Amino acid sequence: MESSSSLRSQLHPPTRRVNEGFQNNSNKGNQNTAAEFIKLVERLQLHFQSQLRSCLVAMNKFTKSIKYFIQALRSVKPQDSQCIISLSMVEAGLQSCQHGYGETNSWTYALESFLINVKNFRLLRQQVKMEIYMRLKKQPQDLKNAAQRRSRGEIEVLLNTWSTLVNVDHDLSRLEHASVGENLIFFETEQEMNSYKGVLSLLPKLSDIVNRIDFLLTKYQM
Image (cartoon, rainbow, N blue to C red):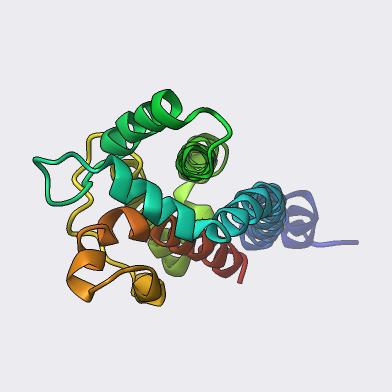
């Protein structure tokens, strides 16, 4: 005959074992959710990379006509200004070229190609913000480690910088990219080149930003 203590043990299992079972199930659930989150980031990055490639291909085509772009900037620079400092000035220059030289002129084409590239980057930024950044931001904090939170914070900073650079009225005169020096052969002096370095630095700088975001998304999955 079983004792009363043995019967109580069978009828009422130790609470500790039950709690351990719940904890194990909870841990497995968190691990599954975290894995699904990483897969989501991976899918978002693949989509971003496909859009990024299109932007970079268009940008590479533009760089082949950089000589004509520089010539066009010279021709449309206002007489009362030492340099072209904003996208709105480039847009005004395009209208001037279209009116003076026609739609098929090489200078017109170069200015138009530049502005189309800027537009492509502007649209890509909007997609990155809404389809990637906002979705990362909505994920529960307990699914992210410290490195992921830092990566998301850096993506936010990059998006803000990106937004500023593609603003048509932003002063680009202080913007500088190392690659601009490669265009010195198209100028009479380095001083003349510096008059256009802000505008010439814009696309390379935007390229750096999108490549950095791509790297951060890779890092997010580690």
